[in-house]
Length: 100
Picture (tube, rainbow, N blue to C red):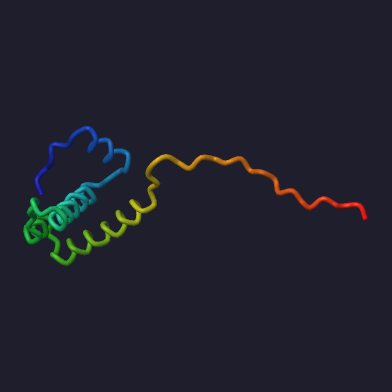
């Protein structure tokens, strides 16, 4: 893969996550496979991606599958919207003793 002219966000993520060049290549490769899978307007040649990284097509698809599973799991854990209001806890009152 060619060297990418990275924007500030990419540079910050690389630094914050301490990504290696190989990890960056894996991220880019899996993102391209995901886009090709889910976006009909995006085309990716997995054979070329594999050749560029000197990996097999099954390896590329394996990365993509594992990263998609992790991404879906993470997205499902994210709460969206306003958090529920805290309701005051009202103590449960016991029965009053009555005089016999």
